Amino acid sequence: MKLIVKDFKPHALEVEYLKSKRKTLAISVYPDQSVEVISPLESSKQEVVDKVLKRRRWILKQQRYFRDLQSHEQHNLTITGAELHYLGRQYRLRIITCDQTRKAALHGRYLDVPVENSDDQDMVKKRISAWYRERAKNYLTKQFERLSIKHAQLKLPETILRISLMKTRWGSCTANGTVTLNPLLVLVPSNLIEYVIVHELCHLKHPNHSKAFYSLLTKTYPGWKKQKDALDAFGAKLKSLPSPFVV
Image (tube, rainbow, N blue to C red; front, side):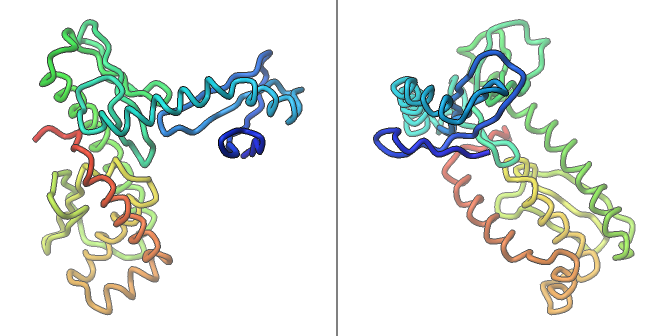
């Protein structure tokens, strides 16, 4: 649940408030500067507010740290603290010097990337790219299969799915039934990925943007215009960031 700490300065602070079977209260500040509080079941809201106010300086310091990282380092994907996105959420890169047999993995709000030499920027890029490519292939394939089954009433022809980088498009569809999805889609929220896939599935029935196509899209995916606007806005934001995919 959301909790507003009104007396927090210089302005009121909104925190994500959770309760759990723990003995102590924990406060976390994440890379997107959001604040999460996990408290014991018996803690009152006032106790949570008091604790947040007591940790005010620390919270502001952590938010300032992440804000400075974002403004100065977000265009360099090879340093610890660099900004990354996955399924619409913001993460930070954490480079770990160790045996490369370990795979890159998400831990909390961080993507941990193991390399033998943290100064080897090319290797850091390659390992980040490998993680994203694997995630894109697995996630997009599963979602495509799920939505194809969900919309079986469309009686679609046999389809081939390709995952391939495209400069200006999220997805495309050919007359022979090949649907191509841009792996950059795994950077955006999952509901927007669903919109792109359904959009391309409808193109299997109507290859152009005709009235018949939009009629089918509206029937199959009501509210698609809102999703399209959100996708356009998210895409504009991503243009200011470097691609995590090494070409």
